[in-house]
Picture 1 (spheres, one colour):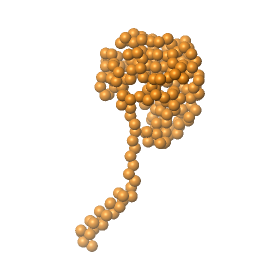
Picture 2 (cartoon, rainbow, N blue to C red; picture 1 turned 135 degrees about the vertical axis):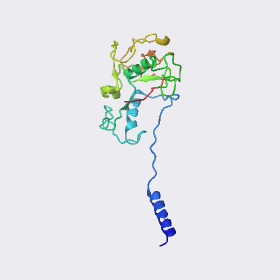
Picture 3 (cartoon, rainbow, N blue to C red; picture 1 turned 90 degrees about the horizontal axis):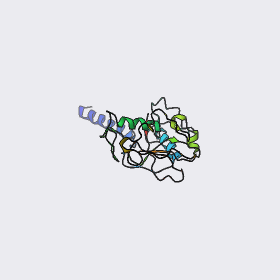
Picture 4 (cartoon, rainbow, N blue to C red; picture 1 turned 180 degrees about the vertical axis):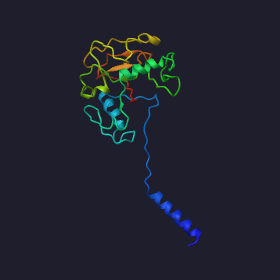
Length: 215
């Protein structure tokens, strides 16, 4: 068998192998900070957790417990994707005003650092997983690490940046959560990322819940 024939056979075998190998693509969605989606608290809590489940946007194979939102793979895959907590939001907001952030007032659609490395902020659209919520079984039954449970009388939680940032960048604050059916807590309300609004009712939520934190 001459050299040319050998090369031809090798090429044909290689092509056949390549044709037999399935072509797959693992794609994930990432928010660009300019689009929001209006949905209910239970849907956000569960669907964001499901991003790491089998068939989710991250291409993983985890299974999410739909009652308490936990999963067995949180430790093994080093991911724990969940709706942003109030304490996480507060820490991020304080950092934005530090030497590591933009420091001056953040406008709608800008980031906490002033460039693409920061967190995009949607003013009047940053709902967090926090509040005095009893109507929503998904929230009530969720593992404590996926929510900041408050009482009707506000008691500070480390990192929530509710009282200590009062007035920063002309921020305003509504009354604290006033009923057991409050829909949750809206941050970045009324023109400043340090403002908050907490008198919503779950049947009248017209603003957008803003996900997502990776920890």
